[in-house]
Image (cartoon, rainbow, N blue to C red; front, side, top):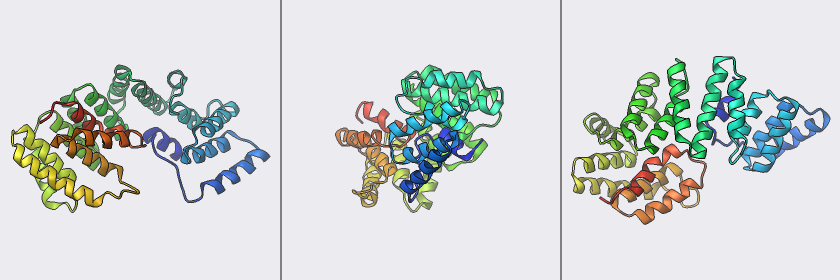
Length: 296
């Protein structure tokens, strides 16, 4: 599997930006004028995607597939183009034509992503489950998508199970933190609280861990302790968020802290900023759920 395909497949929201995109586009355009190939159109599509030019990105992807209908990178990227009405048809065709297990895994993951995007969570969940059942090795992003879908379906306990299993397999900090978050959503504190306390005592930046401990305190009916942690988290977050170039993960934490404190109007403002960004839904799905939940 090529590196670009891995990035497009596993991190569909990533921007392939570098210091001189326009120069690269000019160089690729000269080569295309001289001798057009599917790979050159595909590479230029990546550059247009870095500039967030959806129209030119799609044009080049279709041009690549016209020259080579089996170009996996272009096909994958086109399937992931937002609001592509042919996305599911292309993904299912990709699966039907896939004889190699790796290609089948990729196709199922694409189907899951397209189904999630269209709101068909059952198809997305079925595809994730099929990957986990049929393949011994698959990217941890599959488990993150699966857990996000389960959280959207209000099945936090199942999401925690998926993430715990993935964490034990991959030993990823991202998976561990997602597992802790899902466990808290499921109301579990016995295992998670000691892990949270350890991180608070050893981390330089503690806002996200104070928020997690506040969630545990609310589960344990300790509202005063929760409020103290949430206020401490907000102090740290507001000192670290730069208004001109805010870190979106910090915005997600701030929104969750505000929602837990009952300031849902302000929390919703942060949520809207996150939805308009390229940040993965996994980063703010708990915030979304908390805003919808009754006040504490």
